[in-house]
Structures are given as C-alpha cells and as structure tokens.
Length: 221
Figure 1 (cartoon, helix red, strand yellow):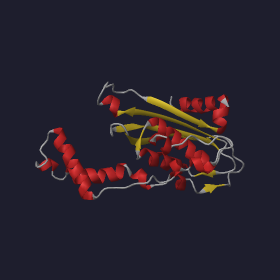
Figure 2: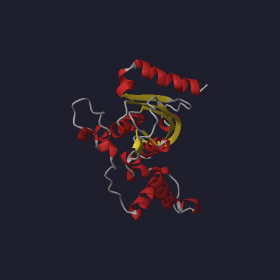
Figure 3: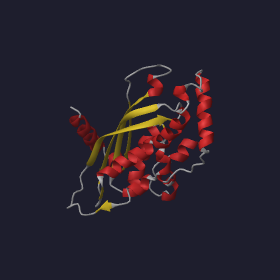
Figure 4: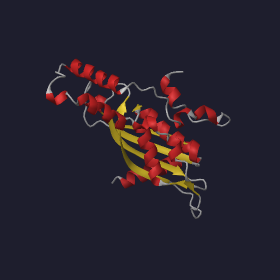
C-alpha cells in the first residue's frame, strides 16, 4: 500500500471496521531533524540556486525558513479529530444542511513543495448534534498545513467529519490554484482545480448533492 493511501484511507463502507480509517484522524508520526540540520539543509538549497550564502541578505535566511516551516506545516502537530470532539445537542430539532463556505487556506504541494492557495466549502447534515462552526475551519487548516495533494485533502476533510460527528452525510468542495502549474512547468496562471467528496446522504442522494451545489452557486453570485 503506498504512502498516500496510508495517509487517508477511504471512508469505511458498511461492515468494515472503523479502526481501518483511524490513521488520517490522528497526528502523523514525525521524526524531525535538529535545528542545525534544518538550517544546513536550507544553506545547501541556497547554494543550489547559485546565490552567495554569505551575503548579508541571506545570512539569517536559514533560521527564518526553519521558523516559517514550523508555522506553515504546523498541521503535523495537531489532531483533526480532537477539534471535532465537543458537540452541541441542543439544536431545537434542527436537522437540515449546515454549510460553511469560503474557508480560505494555504497548503503546499507534496510533489514540488510550492503553495496551493484556495477555498474549501463544507456542508453536513446533522443527526441530533452540531459542532462549533470554527471547528470545521480548524479541520481544514490542520490538513492544509501538511504536504498535500488537493484530492487527498478533500477526502480527509470529509471523512474525518463523517467518522467523528457521524452526521447523515458530508459534502466537501475544494477550489484551488496550484503554484506548481502557475510558476513552473506549463506556467498557466489563474487555472483553478475543483475537487469534491460526498459521504452518506450526499453520496446516495443526487438531489442533496444538487442542493449543496446550488447553495454554493447562489451565494457566489
């Protein structure tokens, strides 16, 4: 089984053991090098660009890059399932769609380590309980602050919400621009990639999918 599948196994189908879907819900195992090793690695990359690592503007760059990476990849130190742990059951009988749209995020492509910039739109159908709206945004941030593919991130967001909250269904749409397309290779600026994942009622009922997409379209006018 390759590394991508290990990081986000498909949502468990009926009859499968829920333990098989746990790995993407936890903090990934990390074995970080020392600060000195990181700074030396950055110096090597600076030399690879052809620049002079001794010039004034680059002397502090290795330390700054190490600090920036700690922030940009802080998702490896956080557990998305923990963010969804506190729910509210006093919903006055509300059981219709909860949609949080336009959740902005910055991630990094796992193939070239350049930015992915976009928005996530997340909806779920409650089954007796809801979660704080900010917690959904936090889940998006945790997965975004790791090396990613957009496809993997979309599935991870949907499945952790489904497995922890156990709603009647989850719908996730992610739209993003990939700097690996804009800055290198084909160099096509402004190209946006859309990915979706549906679980439960959203997967089984095309009308629910259509309602989700219609609400997104109507609110983007």
